[in-house]
Every structure is written in structure tokens, then in C-alpha cells.
Image 1 (tube, rainbow, N blue to C red):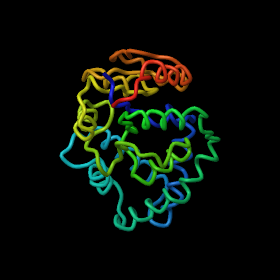
Image 2 (tube, rainbow, N blue to C red; image 1 turned 120 degrees about the vertical axis):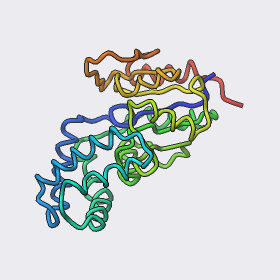
Image 3 (cartoon, one colour; image 1 turned 120 degrees about the horizontal axis):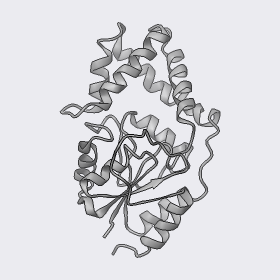
Amino acid sequence: MIRAVLFDLDGTLVRFDPDRFLHEYVTSLGRAVAHMVEPRMFIKALLESTMVMVANTGPGTNREAFWSDIRNRIDCDFDELEQVTTAYYGTEFAKLGASLGVVPHPSARPMMEWLIDSGYDVVIATNPMFPKVATAERMKWGGIDGLPYKLVSTYEDFHSCKPNASYFEEVLETIGRAPEECLMVGNDLQEDCAAGELGMRTYLVEDCLIDRGIECHQPDFRGSFDDMVEFMRSRLAEPIP
């Protein structure tokens, strides 16, 4: 029986052009730190250290992996740099949703509320490459903020990233569920459907599909966002006692 539903965030619950987002994000963050480090140099280091973080498997957190690596790439006051970037996520980053034209899906929040009210553990299983403040902001863009989620994965707390099996194992350990009790919902064939390798069931949302053409675990279910909402209502209709 499914007792926990894990949702990817970007491209699944919050939909925008990922290439445009990345360009606007790194450009605006580069401007925010320009008084400390040359923007192009910073952006290059940011992207390279992010890839190091994606490959992290612990024992340190993703945050620790990122900041440890970027210290080797640029020369500045890193305590101040982290303070500046944290402030950025609460100010300039917050404006990106509007500039990207992000509009909440009208069915997203009601679906999440229904799942929570029905007794399911609901997890925001976004790739933990952003700090809590940035993740919270992206949830606001999708109109799904402020709900009592079982877990929201962020770079401060997690020790690996999707599609590493250790990411999904950490989610399972944190929420106290077995793989067969979980459904992973996402739009990335390679990253989100990797949960199926552990025994979770998976639903691929195809509205903003990402498929790198690499052989991977295939989803148990697939369809549009609206199809997925209907799937939740019909297949998970019985409240958990």
C-alpha cells in the first residue's frame, strides 16, 4: 500500500523553462556578488562546484561539499560570500518566478492538501542543490508553500543528489518508510525514475519532460499533470487510517 508520495519540484509542481531559469539565475547571482568576485569567474566556479555537489555521496552534506569545493576555485571572504548569497535568495531570487512567468497549476495545491488530509506522508523530493530559503521560494512560485510536509529536501540536510540511490535511501530513512510504500512523482526520466531501482513505484509527468536519452529505469505510470492528479484521486482514494 502506498503511504508516502514524493514529488519533484521544478518541472513537476513548478513549471518553467529550465534553460531560461538557469541563465537568469546565474546572471542575477553573479550581479549580487560582483563587489566581491568577477561575475564570469564566479559563475564558472558556481557551475563547476555544483557538479561536484551532485556527485557527493557523503559523509558531509551537499552544502559542505559545495562550499568546500568552491573555496578552491575563487579567492574571497567566503563567510561574507555565503551571507551575500543567502540574502540574494530572499530578495533578487524571489523575483525570478515573476520574470519567468511562473503560474501555479490550479490543481497542485488542492491535490497536496487532499493527500495530506487523507493521511499520506507528502515529501517535496526536489534535488537538494539549493538552500532552504531558495527551495521555499520556489514552492511559493508553485503555490504549494506553507503545508505540513513530511520532508523537504535541501542542501543543508542531504548528503547526495538524484539520481544517486543514496538520495532516495536518505529520504526513506528520514520518513521511516519502505520503498514499496512510496510513489515518486517527477518529470525527469533519468533522475526521478531512478527511485524505481529501490522498489518505489514511479509516475513520470510528461508536461515538462526531461529525457537525456540514457538507458534508465522505466516509470510504472506516466501521463500529463492532469492525468497524474486524476490518478491520485482514483488510485489513492482510500484515506490512511
